[in-house]
Amino acid sequence: MSNHMNAKNVLDFQRKLAVNNNRPWFTEHKGDYLTIKADLEAFTQQWIDAMAAEVDPELGALKPSDCMYRIYRDTRFSNDKTPYKHWIGIILAPHGGRKSINGCYYLHFEPGHCQMSAGVWCPTPELVKALRQDIYDNADELADIFSSEAAAPFFCSFDEDGQQKKIPAGFPKDFAHPEWLARRSFTVTTPLTDEEMCSADLFERLMAFCHAARPLNQFLDYTIEEHD
Image (cartoon, rainbow, N blue to C red; front, side):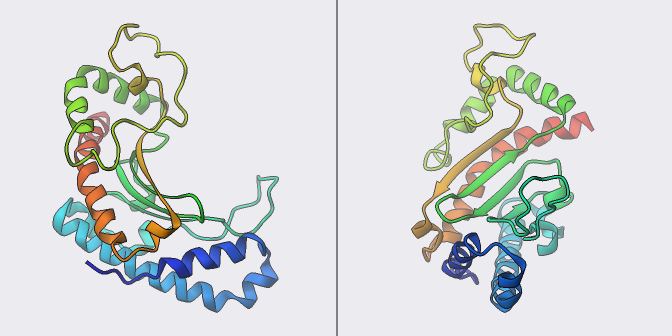
């Protein structure tokens, strides 16, 4: 399936912005950004529609504005006063898109650091505790998800970033997968080269990733819905 977006234009604009991250330059090139933004909005709507039809009907209630992060940085409490983000992110999740606490599907644009991700990012401490317990109690089910044929091209475990060194208190030291518990976020990620991001089959690849990640998000969402 083709997509509406020219990812090369997105990444090219980001490369220029990285060395011109100031308001005068952005104002001069705002027309370029608005063209990119319109392409991304069309792409996001296409993604929403495909996901609602093939993966999760609840995602059909989303609008692109629910899913796209603003390019403007909040610099009030940061030592970094550059006004614009060096990345662009699109996040699909039921019940609010980027504001949802549910398992999500995420596409990240950043030259040299593009990626597709899914799962639950930085839940509350109470929800972290509940997710750890359900992962421990249902480890066989999670193992089947990670070892599935659909997941094989994309991920085989949770992301390693943010992983703690020790298994949390209250769990046996001999648990077969301590790395599943020693974390505060529960995400999976597939990196994409800039060339892969710009390829004609990006949308097809993104949808395959989302199909593979759907059972993981369902697994995590069960705990989230029970916790609510």
